[in-house]
Image (tube, rainbow, N blue to C red; front, side, top):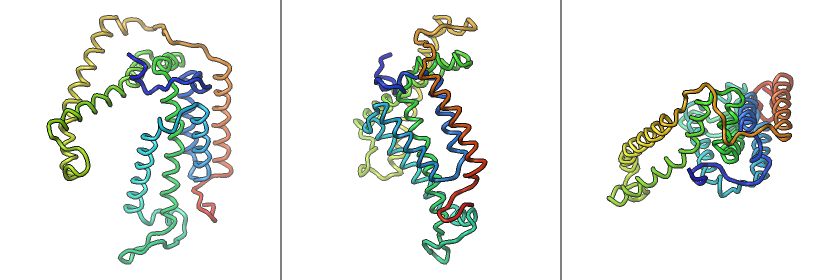
Amino acid sequence: MSRGSALYVDNQSMMHSLDGGIKFLLLLVWTICVFLFNDIRIFTLFFVSGMGLLFFSKISFKTIKPLFIFILTFTIVNSIFLIVITPEYGSELTGHFTPLLTFRGKGLPLETVWFALTLSMKYMAIFPLMLLFVLTTHPSKFASSLNKIGVPYKVAYAINIALRYIPDVNKEFKNIMYAQEARGVAFKKGEASIFTRMRNYNTILVPLIISSLNRIEVISNAMNLRGFGNLPKRTWYNGQKYSKDDVLVFIFIILLFLLSLYLKMNIFKRFWYPGYLI
C-alpha cells in the first residue's frame, strides 16, 4: 500500500521518531490526566501544550484544519444541547445562580454556560495529542510497538489495517458520492431540503458497505494464503528498539501522571468557577 493511503504525515521530528507504543501510552495518560480535572485553566494548559507539540512536530494547520473544524463544531453542538437540556445544572453544581438570559419565566444561569465552556475545553485539550498520535505514527511501526509491549500480534495487526484503510474508505465514499451526483442525486446545500439530502446518503451507505466487505474478503484471503495466525509469535519488518528519546518521554509520562494525581487530590479537587473554588 502506498504511503499516501495512510493518515501518517512523513516529517523529521522527535515525535515522528518516537516508538508508537510510547506515543500511545502518552495519549492514554494525557487523556486520563485531562479527565481527572474539572478546571478550564488546566484544560487550557493541556490544549496549548498539545498545540505546541503539533507545531514542533512540523504539522501544518492546513493538515489539521478539517479535523479541527469538526471537533470544534462537535463541542459547540454538544454545549448547546447541554444548555438546552439541563439549563440549571451549572447552578446546582456551583451553588450559585447568576441570571444571563430569561425565556418564558425561566432563567439561563451564567454558571451553566461556564460549565458547558469547561466541558468543551476538556474535549479540545485531548484533540491535539490525538492528532499528534495519528499523524506522526506509521501504522506498521505502531503495530510492532503494540506487540512489543504485550498486545497480541493479531490485535496489533488489526489496528494496523484499520489505520491504513480509513483513508481508503474515505476515498471510496467520495467516489460513490460523485457517481451518485452524476446521476442527479442531491447532496449539496441548495439542491434539495436537508431531509432529502440526509435520505440521499443512503444511496452511498449500501455501496460503501458492500465495497468494504469485498475489501475485507480480499485482505482475509491474502492473509490466510500467507498462513497468518498459525504461529504464536511473529517478527516485524518495521520493528525498532527503544531510543534515548523514548526513555525520556516515558519518564515524562510517569511524572505527568503523578503530578496530575497530586494536583487533583490536593489543589484542584472540584469544579472551578471564577471567584469560587467548589
